[in-house]
Every structure is written in C-alpha cells, then in structure tokens.
Image 1 (tube, helix red, strand yellow):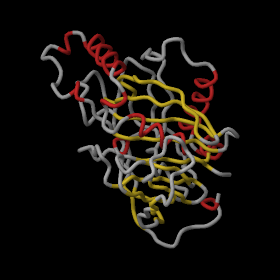
Image 2 (cartoon, rainbow, N blue to C red; image 1 turned 45 degrees about the vertical axis):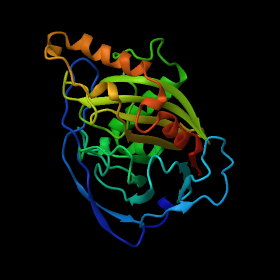
Image 3 (tube, rainbow, N blue to C red; image 1 turned 135 degrees about the vertical axis):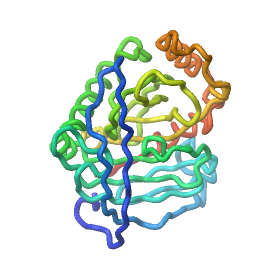
Image 4 (cartoon, helix red, strand yellow; image 1 turned 90 degrees about the vertical axis):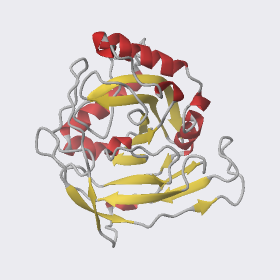
Amino acid sequence: MQIYKTLKPYVSFIAILSIVLVFTACSLQTPNSEMANQPVASIEPTVVEATETPSYRFAPADAIAADYDEVSFWFSPEVARSWKAEYVPQGPGSSSSAGPVSHTDPEHIIFKLNDYVAPSQSTADILQPRIYIYPAVEMSEQNQGAGIQIQALQAYLATPPADLMDLSAEIPFLPLVNGAQVLHTQVKFLDFQNGSGVRFITSIAQGFVPIGNGAIFYTYQGLTSDGAYYVAVLMPVTNPILDGGPPDNFMDDPISYVQGIAEQLDRQPSSSYTPDLSSLDAIIETLLVRP
C-alpha cells in the first residue's frame, strides 16, 4: 500500500482519547491512559457519488464510495454523507493509546464518516464512526498489547466459543483501551472482499454501569485473508429499548442486569437500531484492502 512508502504533504494534529477503565469480571487489556497528539497528514473529505448501481447486491443506487490508498468500501447516505481519510505516521500509541511497555504504532489509515446518522455525545475515540486499517505484522511487532489481540482474533475466528454471548469469552478488540466489554451482543461472523471477521455490539466501561444509548457501539474486528492487515470498524448505534434508563436497583444484581440488557438487544431486529445494522454490515461486505 502506498501509505507505507510516502508521507502526505499536509499535517494536522489528532488528540486520541483513551478511556481509563477497569472491569473486574473480564480479562482486561492493559494499556495506560496517556493521550498523545500525533501529526497526521490528511486529505480533505471526498464524496464520490455512484453514477450507476454498484455491483454489490446490498449497495443502494445512491451509495457513496470511499477509496483511498488501496482501501475501498461503499456506504449508504442513510448512514453518513461524506468521509475523510487520515494517514497516521508511525508513533508512540498514536491511535490505540500507550501500553504498559514502551511501543510504537506503525503507519496506518483511519477513515472517518461525516454527518453520521447517530452521532455520540462523547468525544471518546471508540464512540466515533471510524474504520482503522492496521498492518497486522508490524502492529504485532511494535505493540505487544495489540499483538495479543491480533493473535486472539485469529484463534477466535478459527474456534468460536459455543456461547457467543458468554461475557467470560471476551471478543478480541482494537484499538486498545483500558477497559473491557461490559457486554457483547448481536454477534455475527461476516466476510469482507478479501478477509473475514466478527461484528457485534458492545459497551466498554469501568465497571457495572447502566447501559444506555450513547454508550453502545457496533464494531467489526477482522483480518485480511493473507493476514497482512487488521480491520477495526467502530460505529455508534442506538436502540429505543435503552431510552427508558435502568431500574433504580440495577446495582443490586448488576450481572443479571447486564445479561438481561444483552439478551434484549440480541432479540431486537436489525431495523430497530440506528443506523440499521444491515447498513453497517453492508459497509463491511464491500470493504476491500488491497495489498
């Protein structure tokens, strides 16, 4: 990919926020919470209107095409209206927060969707509509915590747990955060154009906290078939069953409360979410990461 050969001419700064979280019921990722401003060269948002119906059966006639540095995908205007790609040069934890030991993140790309249909009120990176494309080998070599997650995803995809909603079987996740998944639900295995992975809805928090809109998000964690690239998709979602808030006594039995919410969310149809989960799945299925 050209990203690993040249630097882009324009420089801006991104402040990457990590959530300092601890979740005692699950096995935690352990990077620290330092935030770093790293220079990035970015391109201006580019919108490419489809001039004809894409060949993908699930892409609408007015689908918006994103294509940058050998990575391409389609998305519906019902999800977002435009996109921006940022090239992130090699740096200390530039997008996945600094870890417990000294490390760097390799050069990678972040796609950001603009005018997203369900924007989060939070500024946390994991609650923003983004697609991360990491070079898997370099990431594993330079970032020990990320390497563990990459190996874990390979094992997870090869041998999924019998109970996909078992909270003790945490689903591998990048970018790294100082926390764990409070829940995972709507688990589904999906292939993209040259790879495979798993999508699910989750929430990451310090402990047993109320699960509400603004805290849950759709994520996809996948690898290209040749193992060269790791794909992490993060898209905030909402569902009307969370509008009422938790019961006053939810902390009396937080485990049952979380399990109940996860089961309710799992029973909801794709169309009850905003955006529709099928629209987000379509982004995954059109994704192509060319070597």
